[in-house]
Image 1 (tube, rainbow, N blue to C red):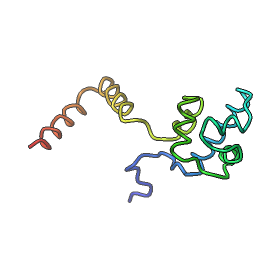
Image 2 (image 1 turned 135 degrees about the vertical axis):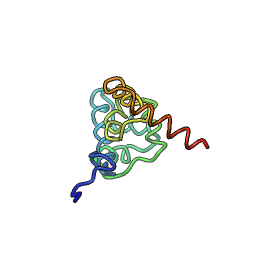
Image 3 (image 1 turned 30 degrees about the horizontal axis):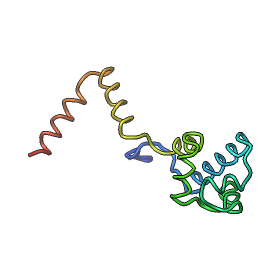
Amino acid sequence: MIVNPTIHGNRRIVTKSDITTAYGDALLKIKSEDRLTWEDVGVIIGKCEDQAMKYASGEAEMGAFSIAFAAHAWGARFTAKAHALLPPHVDELEAHRAIREQLVGRPFAKKRAAALKAAAK
């Protein structure tokens, strides 16, 4: 009897709160490190200072444009913590698969090739 199936792995579920907190923490850190005011932060992300403060405290959720403006201005300093919460990118998964095949042998590659060939028919 299967008690805890791991069909989708053992990854932790990422919540809206996790992402909001990650972006808010990044704004607080950047504001401090760059010695910015909330007005400065607001101008950069296209919002008023009150809204920038709400984003940083987690009282409000950032919209796509504000996230894009912040990512453009601060790059990984802003996005790294939130991105780290998300599952690995497909390219990373393929890299792990390739390493596994090198360590274990080629059985995975043969099965994958057979599956792709069957799907193409």
